Length: 397
Ligand code: C5P
Image (tube, rainbow, N blue to C red; front, side, top):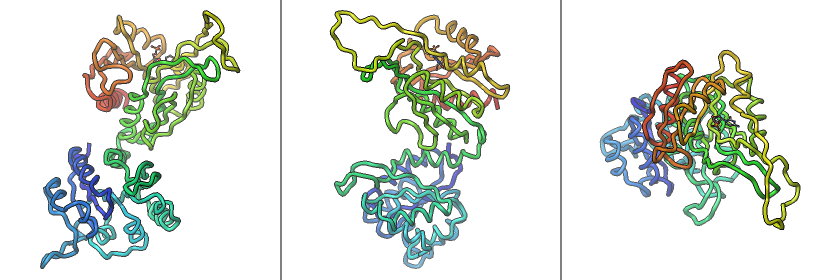
């Protein structure tokens, strides 16, 4: 995804510097050309040799080594993007005031390309008003801030301040490079995850769905520059990409209402949610007591969200559904394509080991209303999502 992109990774003196080696590797695996600059204190945490071995390029730390002058201007002109990861409180402060007392800062001041910052520090340092003020100054200069994580810190304290994981940083890099691409300006609404239909304040009926496919689709659409809104039932925290707008719902009716709110403004609808087809007719206000030998629940039909939305469709809107089938897969999927008035439907067959819900892999076939179809082989859900999005682009853009 990053072929031909020229990226400078700037490493500063933080315990998180070891993660920079993973970051460099991931960027290179994606096809980026990477050059590394380090502050003198960063070499106490990770050796330049490790990074020069990974990149195949010399790593620069000093403005001059013995009798060689390193041109920070040349690097600044070369790069398409500079990522400072980890970025310490000291480097943040020097960037904010334009101090260039090491090579990394001299490169930074010579850049003509955008800058990403992945801060790393202890929770109290991160919260300190002077650090927050410096962050705001840099964000105000259109630097891209990669949010710090929350969790256990090297000091033993717990809280905000951890450097984002290398994979998250690479995702931000991909979004940065691809936001100008094919789907720029396209608004995509994705339904994702299960719905929960309450019986009483503590019990509910639901479907087995992790939301992983919806998350992978969101990621693929974002990479191509689309604006993504996810209307999601309850899923694991942190599942969805941070740059997607997420509307959390519980029941099918809430999911429908959230989709109706976007019915005019979205261009493409992707119905990846596992919506409960029925809900209990009555929801008890109090917890139901288990004093009956049997319990019969009367169920009523939930609205079909895909059908409702497609019945209101405008001519430029596209409707993409999903079907999870266990028998007569092809016939059932094509039937749903027509009854729900969709443009295409993505069939998951539970007969394929590794396909379906709660797995990390998937294998699908996409059927379109013009009778065309395409198979996407068993791969990671992220790759299947990229395959689906590429297919949709080839079809509708
Ligand atoms: O459940 P069913 O097999 O009919 O689901 C097929 C497609 O319809 C999926 O895209 C699913 O998200 C959508 N659907 C919906 N509302 C429902 C049931 C399913 O949007 N109540």
